[in-house]
Amino acid sequence: MPGSNCVFAGCSACHSRNRGLSFHRLPRNNPEWKSELLHIIRSTRADPINIDRLTMCSRHFEDECFSMTTTTTGRIWRRLKPGSLPTRHLTKLTHKLPARKPLVRLIWISLCTFLL
Image (cartoon, rainbow, N blue to C red):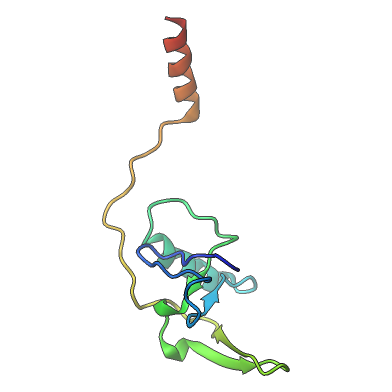
């Protein structure tokens, strides 16, 4: 995940710059938890997101949401406990982005302008 940014709007945490933070992806094997996380994420953003690559930083979760595990090499991993939801440093969406014009309409307008 080098260079990945936190998905929450207003959060400037980046994996390569913030060494003290942990970054987490959406769960693959728990669809209920995944849908709850996506609902919270989408309530803070108006722009579309790529759910396959998004990461969330540990700033948005309480300390009780993590379990610490140690690998055989002695490295400590912070893992999210199943069902943990972000509750800290969330900015709610206050406005919607303007709707995009359909691509077909833009091409038609461009074509009409060109023919005139």
